[in-house]
Image (cartoon, rainbow, N blue to C red; front, side, top):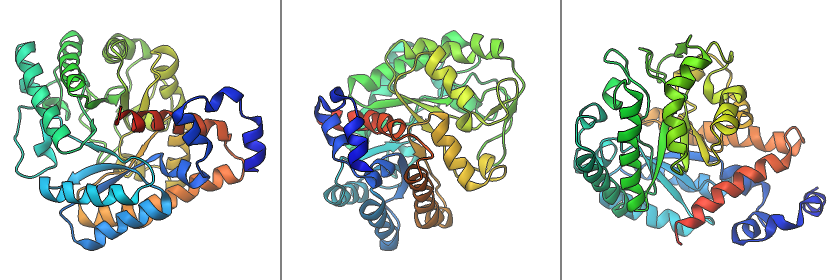
Length: 354
């Protein structure tokens, strides 16, 4: 089957370095590169052994830092890099600095305070955050939050407010400061979870806004930032009743708006697929298949609680891996769909050393 597939691939597909890497990847390696897995470098050895098991047996190479300190992070990443056959790609939530996830790091103001800063001052703070990330060998800041948030919204303190022009302006400065330091940023939470009091960590947020309302406000910010060459966007679990009956993360209709109407060509990362918004409403296999088929490129799992981390590493990642692998082995999904996603991720990974 593999030989037949390679025979029918277009000749130009393997015309550069990353495409040649893709040509020689096994199905396991291609499936593994789709996942981003939580890691806590402060935990005992059995946690690190679980991570090593995932790298060796499930070809995982993308990680989100859930808790760490600088020393243990440096030591752990150095060890894991020697084991991984692909360049590791490391992300962290650092909306208000690396202190969100890493001990003894500097704390910066949250967005609801930053929105009142002059742009040059916000840029300076964002650049300091980026420098800290770079010094810790973290490649991607899962920020900024670009939700249009009002005072009573659960996202309010993490947002730049309810004025779409200010949200765009402040987010652009945040992004550009990171670009200056060669640190990636990720806009979140597409298509927007402002104007809701429901936290998707616990329940499914539902919006009755019309497409026109979303386009005029939430998507205005995304469109303007995409025009500034954004590489990553995170999809959220909000259910837009006037667009689809599925949460955005699982909704091809919603992701297609991002691809076909906002012309985003970069990488879409799901919000954590183990959140209660999804777990309480959909079977696990459906979550994995729908999230993949909706158009997301990277499937994220994250948690800070020890028992939940163990569940993700020991059960959810292996199960999710096998769900996708079986779908491809059974020809339920076209292999070209997988190759397109893998190639995008490879180009990001290998850009780290350029």
